[in-house]
Image 1 (spheres, rainbow, N blue to C red):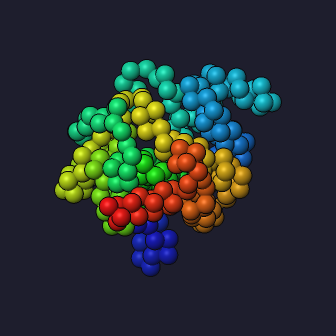
Image 2 (cartoon, one colour):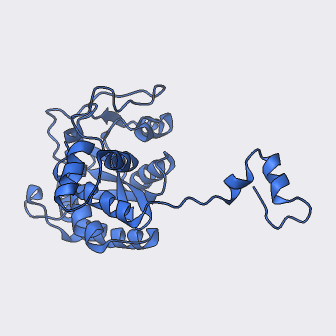
Image 3 (cartoon, rainbow, N blue to C red):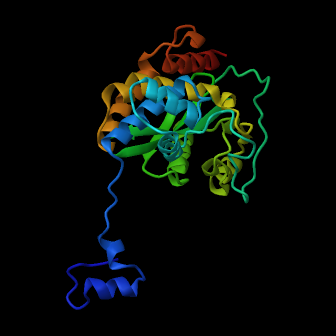
Length: 276
C-alpha cells in the first residue's frame, strides 16, 4: 500500500492516510535466532518421541542436552510451533465456536478397502527461518498419500485445494476423518464433502490416536526426510517432499500391507474388483 517512490505523496503522508506509523512501515521482523531455531528443531524431534512433554519437561530435556534454556523460552517456542502435550487441560483446544463438530465414526469399524476411509491432517516443518505447514490426504486402507500441499499459513485454502485434488484424482471416499481443527470444521471444507455425499468423522478432542496412521506418516516423513536434509527454503522443502512422498507411495513397503507398498496395495485391490 505504501509506495516509497510516489511522485507526490511522501512516505509520512501515505502512512497517515492508511493509519499506520512510519516506524511500523520501516520495521522488518528479525525472525528467530539460529539458537532458537535449533531449539525448535530439537523440541519438534523430541515431541515425536514424547508427545506428553510440556514446556517444563522439554526445557529439562534440552538442559540435559547441554542447552542453557528456561521454561518461558521453551513455552513460547512450543506455542509458536503448535506443540501441545496430549495430557492438555480440558478445552485447551477449542473448536471454532461457529463450526459444527461431527462425531467419530471409525471406532470398531473394519477398514479393508481403498476409498472406504480417507483422513487428513496438518503438521509443521522446520526451515532455516521458521516453519512451513503441510497438509496431506491419506487412504486408511492402503496408507497411500493421495494429495498434499505446503503453505506458510494455516488457513483453509490449502486444505481445500488438497481435498479437491484428491477427489479429482481418486473419486470420493465413504468416510472422511480429521481432527477438530478449524480448517477441517470450516463450512467450506465440510460443504465439499457433504455435497459429494461423504460421511464426515472427527477425532475426539485431544485424541491424536484416533488418526494414528497419518501421525505415523508425519513421524516417518520427518525422520527419513526433513531432519536428515535440514532444508533451508520452501522450494528445497517442496522438492524434497515430492521425492520422499513418491518413494513412500511407490517404494516403501509396509508390514501392515503384507510387505506391499501403498501403490501396490491400491493396484491389487483394483485388480480384485475387476476380476469380481
